[in-house]
Length: 202
Image (cartoon, rainbow, N blue to C red):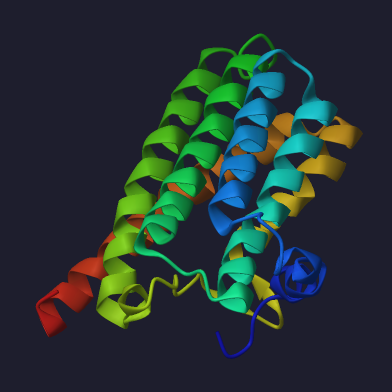
């Protein structure tokens, strides 16, 4: 990636001590997945701040496996797909957990509807982004192309707002915005894949 986002640049520095250790990129991916699932579970139990903190930590650590793979020369096809599946499951856990935790509040049943929309969008976006990687060449060497971004930030970096939002007690409106955003992003990705498929026969 020519101009990586700021969090990936930081991960590139912090992961260096692990380059010559037995810790593998897949170990870090597994840790990221466990933390994301734990964050979703805490949100489901109404532990908003703790759940948000754990999930945001997971999303930051998500950059470490790829950086370790590049710096240690341990890229693999399995790791590439494992990272994608981990990301999809992680975001599904976020929406699934938050929707149950918030369903007892002002959103009521709409939290479940929106949360399930987010869960479905997370899985569909995972598959669609895999198709985009194939179309744009990122899958050739097991490196993901990445999300849209500018000025050192990617679209998904908005998830870092989850912790201060939860701490301020604004999780419900953030959840609504994130759920709608996930659905719109899924539709945009689908449109992009269809456009590339028509042009390049991918």
